[in-house]
Length: 297
Image (tube, rainbow, N blue to C red; front, side, top):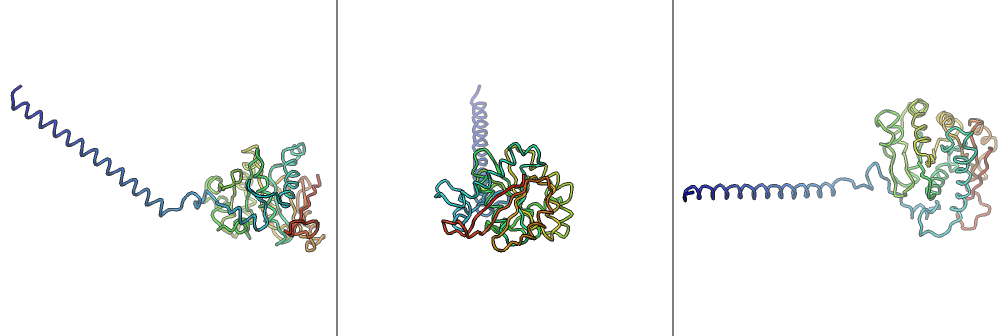
């Protein structure tokens, strides 16, 4: 090989080397740009906690307001003991011998005869208490689409939920089911209000959703916060889908005749229990709340 050929080969090698170095530099630059864009996006876009699929509950604030304590560092509280007794009844009905005679025994609707008797307070506390179980998960559904209160009680903004699914704006119920910072707790918000809420809650799609709630996960308990029973058609419709009902009454306020009328709207095949809310008797920690659960089955 003469000197000219050697020079040509050397030039070709240098050219390939330069090309490889340029390619590597371009790749590095591209990766740096991607990393920079990703970092910028992470600053501008909501993080996981604020995304629609995740709800961050301020457990310390809830505990300070008198709700069930859901932290391992919390001290022993009377309200935890009271709801522990309530949930034992509910769980026994859902998974014990009686469950074989109930339709959707793990679907529990929480209601009242009239507004403002504490049903959402009860539904949230029951969900928090069941979430403490090691072998159970709980789904809290806000089905009070006329006056949604679950997210408000948790001091969070309402967001897409049950109504968006029933309207077909969300194709799968999982799209409106939110994880929370409580490992065993999921929440489905009510979503937007709609003038056809009665028809939507009575639809086949709602029935299919309840069946999925009841049967997809054998360890799941579903707590459904429903509207009051008197004067609202939606609640009577939902009563046909649940296996258990908890009727919340307020001490010295709820009228016996109203409670009797409310229970008449429920299926006689359900396990029906009562919670007396805001009881001033037998309170030792100054919370002003007391509870009683009694099933008719």
